[in-house]
Image (tube, rainbow, N blue to C red; front, side, top):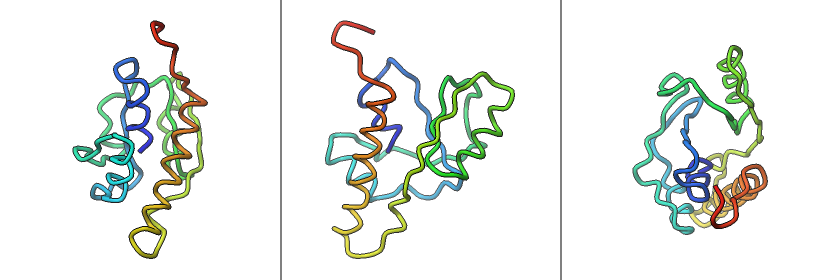
Length: 127
């Protein structure tokens, strides 16, 4: 979700990649709540840290303690800022479809706020 949101606001101004500690199949609830705000993640393919195409990053944002540990290990010899945004995993929520979607919406909205605080959108005409 975070990568999709960053692309939504910054498009081609930034290069964004997304990996997980233990990639699983694409999450249908994630796709649904992102579609609600016009972000299409149907083609997203979850990947692991080991599958990263590049090892040159300016900033890495990790969303779990385990991802933070991997990011810090990976960047020991790089000049790279590593941010830790401890984020609840909405896939752990049980209940009916609407209850689960609400959990994903809360995380989506939380990530959106954090992204806009950390990476503000420049005014029109500025890059």
